[in-house]
Amino acid sequence: MKTIHIQLKKVVDNSYAITVGEGLLARLPNILKESQPASGYVVIADETTARLFGRELLASLRASNLKAILLPIPAGESSKSQKHKTELEQAMLKADADRRSVVLALGGGVVGDIAGFVAATYMRGIPYIQLPTTLLAMVDSSIGGKTGIDTRQGKNLIGAFHQPSAVLADVNVLKNLPDAEIRNGLIEAAKMYITSDAESFTFLERNLDKALARDLRVLSEVISRAVSIKAGVVERDEREGGERTVLNFGHTIGHALEKLSDYALPHGQAVAVGIAVETELAYNLGRLSKKDLSAIQTILKKLQAPISVLEKFSLAEIVKATKGDKKSIGGQTRCVILKEIGKVEENEGRFVEIVSDSELKKAIFSVIPVKTRDQKALDSRLRGNDRK
Image 1 (cartoon, rainbow, N blue to C red):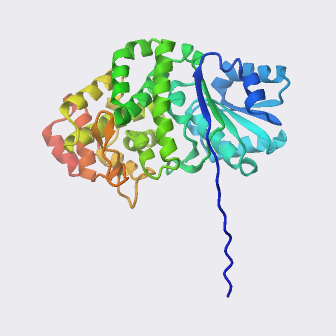
Image 2 (tube, rainbow, N blue to C red):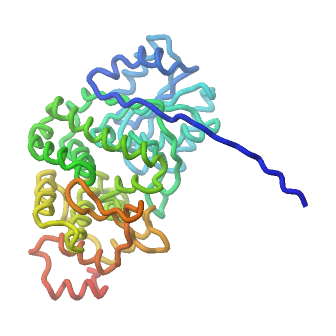
Image 3 (spheres, one colour):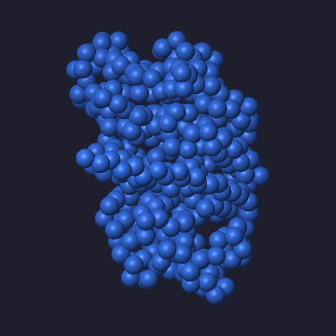
């Protein structure tokens, strides 16, 4: 018997720039010519974004003598599926997109995730550029190279780490963004401030009304602060081996609620409820002060976190759904535990810890409005007799 070793040393520079500013989409053809020349550009957008920005962008690219196609997908989380990924790939093959093509992910988190995953696997990997058009995508999902699709078993369980070549966040597109989408993005920004930067949390508290009113100066600062936090975390832990799990604060419960609602609950709102529950969990465990708990509860209320959604499912259903989360190991739920605003618990490089079902149920129940609960009901639901 012979054993033959292949010695490979892979050194890859995945660095890229994140630009936040006004008028970036209008200048995109020149930006691409200078920094990302390609044999052609594949614009992937959902049908709504294609109508608002995609067709105009396509015309602009072609007017600049750049080969480009626009591939729209249905709007909504359901588009993050193997079916739509395959359809996009087949359309690209039909259009003769080659290894020197570049994917332009124009849209929110759904588009960024599936377009990035297509880029990660097409021709064994081609470049892509994130062009986020929602505040949530600008502050979070467009950064870090996480790509993927959903399955019946859970969200983002199939995917790849594939860093974009660039992220261009044009804040002009936020002017007409619906109020709910502005709040969704601010929730994700608040999540990063809560776990990593107390000063930025204070900035958001003081400027929340201006941010909600679409003050572009304030929104640009909100985005830049959030991007700086996430960029730092990704630099230190690109593939979520440790610190990057901090960015999943609020997502253990949030993803569970998305799954239970069959993704009818928007991601930002689900995370808001998740933050409420996981903050309560930290307080119940004696890690977080009442003052910090109250400050977080106040900002979540102003951002209209839909806490009442917790009443639509039993505690057992919610807890069971958390076990399908990527952070779960061996059927045990693991959560990021807040220590104070701006800091989370860390133990020897681990930023999540195992949480018992009873602790999680108690935290969920504590967040449910007082008028809908009492101690007898709490005792019953903690024993598992909590189906409605």
